[in-house]
Image (cartoon, rainbow, N blue to C red; front, side, top):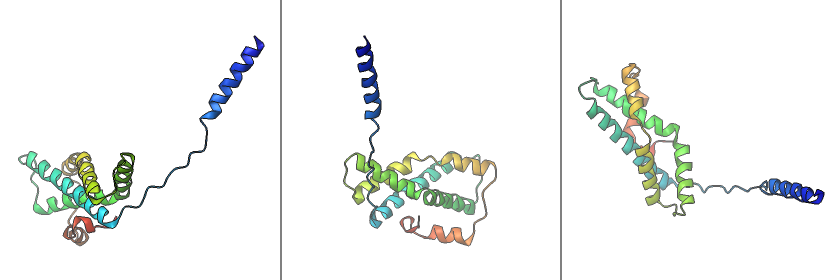
Length: 153
């Protein structure tokens, strides 16, 4: 009986320590510039599409001037810039885990996926409802004049 208890304790101790090995994490490869450009472009396209859809749905409720709409477009770009590194890591990790090649085409698809699934309409609604839309500045105009892929993260 004592030997059976001793064997049981040894088995438990081995099973507990067995799973605690040192795991080496692989570094994700860097995203090429062209792939970044394509992914950012698609994310911004989908964010702008969401804004257009939001404005169409709330046409009678809110009266927005064209400058306020430009500010909301700037909010899209700012959202992308703030989370750009996360979006790139997520896209790379997702493609890498699915064993897909890290090509421009796949990064474009990930840009569409990310842009579609990040919901911006709540942010627009809160900004309009609480009247927190800032005034359009020269910096915002410069940012809006750039192509979406040329915006720095």
